[in-house]
Image 1: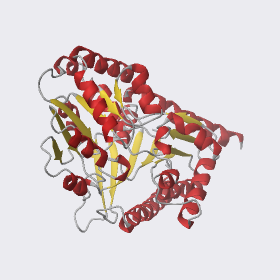
Image 2: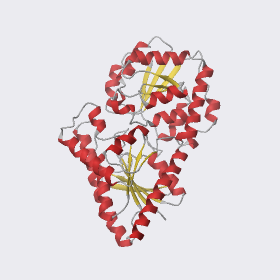
Image 3: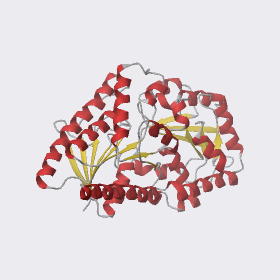
Image 4: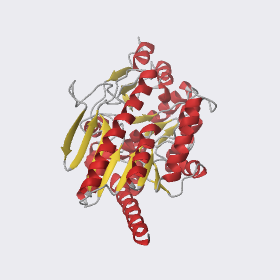
Length: 418
């Protein structure tokens, strides 16, 4: 039985809010008789609290439909200050000692994993996985979700000359250089990682599990006509999302028959609530488990996919919420220049707007609201077709399996040739 260690600090199970990519890929591999150990932090990124661990527990093991899931304790934080850096560092340290111990045991029992697969965004834990792979001579694969440290620079908070960025640049170089494969969620990131030493790359984007979005959704998905036009934003409430511009947009549309729902959490949420005081056309809801998202989406007429104006987002982003919206036959309102807006425009999946421009966003929403309900329905249908043809989790998982098998096969050939 093939054995993999799969690491992502922010990996979630369907009963929790947040992305479930690692869970779904692990489930697929388990169904193909692979043995999967997942290592993740129990401190949920959306909720900002521990979900599984009791106060005295450092870790907890769960068998989730055959997946060996390991929840690790980290230091908590509430806002993106020095405590978040400590949170990332604590996970990396805890992970290193956990994998080192398991590595020694696996050598003694002669059952080392076939692959260590580390999924970013943050680089320190991924770098720790690279070190473990070198110590125990295990093939190493990296999955890049966000392009660190480039995103830290493009978001405006850090500069190339800073010592932390230099350290992260070195980690980035080593990771790309020594990875057997670099898996990218955004197609536009391929050139970026190749310029920094990546040898083998493959684009495996985010995508929904279509079993959670059955075709009956289309039958239920009757867009409103004269009733309130309901728009949903689901996801993080942080600096990168630029949701203050959505609040200003809601003010512009305060007298229109348009209602906004924001579901999720993040360091900016309290400030956003304060900014939205006095508005009757907007509400904030707490995060819900990933498994509840499909049914929740049904009651909305359109889905917002919003980010700040950041150069990196034009080519290096793969938003989960976008593909969930595609899967549920929803037209999209997006403000992400580059690949995201271009795809929506080229396939007529919704309306696009300029980033950080409340008026442009308001015009886009009004334009979609005034679009004939049948055409809005057709936008959703085209979005669903796009998911089925390119972005379904089943298709992505099959390609994932091919990559893993090729790495194991190449490693076996190397052993024979020694």
